[in-house]
Length: 376
Ligand code: ADP
Ligand code: MG
Image (cartoon, rainbow, N blue to C red):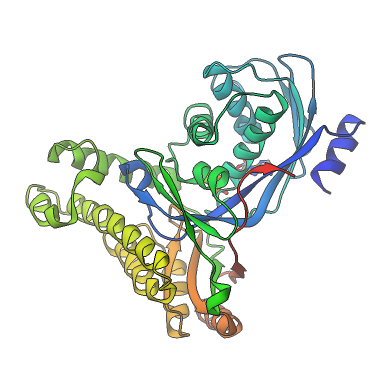
């Protein structure tokens, strides 16, 4: 059932409009966002659609094709609405907390973003609702301010300590472009990302591996990075230059912390190198950077699992130019840069490798760069 059909079924009228916001894959730059560094996501064609109509002031009702029944709430504080509707109540709270006069609304949601696979269905949900409420209420809310408000909904209201990457991608990405984002200044640059012209494609491989300890491990990585920055006397690890990395590592006693720092500092540089190659129309050459990023996540940041490493190995053996895990880790998806005509062979190689180790089969598709959030 579409969002519009669900709206009609639940509320008995037509919505005032439809708004959509996409999931994302991060081409490169993992765990760099909360270290105030660089990321390079692009928006997926998969998206969350919000059918939205007016309601009396301070009344919000939300339903989803994923859930039975509706959830209604008034003006709330963080923690009052729980479960999936907390993402929506969080957006309302975040906008109000920033001083915006948020209109009451009825909201019906549908999505084809895979949930809990590291493709950011949560940001797609927040971003679609935020965009709809901003339009419906005629809020004076420039694009560049929106990601941080959606992030606050997730951090403060839902209680998930995520960085700015996901919401920035869902809100600010453009079709046919990757989004180079400076996570300190929130400055963006739209990077041409037209792979089809080169006969290339990004294959996304959803490992379908069960996520384990995601929130806990994420928090531990984040703390370790913040502690390292404190010891090194810098505001964030972004401020450790690559040519100062050896010195910085010498000043850290803890072997694990040293490896965490090495991942972040080298990963920031790989993002910059990837952007430079894309801008020079040398797309194929980003392959080794993708693969180096994966090795760094596997060995230094230690956020991969066997299914993920296996998908990377199988894709590379099948001739991919590069492959890496994308997303926060401990499951989720791998992306591989391949010749378009090698897609079937690459998928088969990954499926065969999974079957050999009796893992749940992966789900694979070619991802193109779609548009960011907006009214349909
Ligand atoms: P990810 O963002 O990687 O998909 P998260 O755990 O961050 O995973 O967010 C997934 C959660 O977001 C779901 O468990 C659900 O609570 C909520 N969610 C996402 N999309 C929808 C939707 N269309 N309808 C209802 N809830 C949704
Ligand atoms: Mg999420």
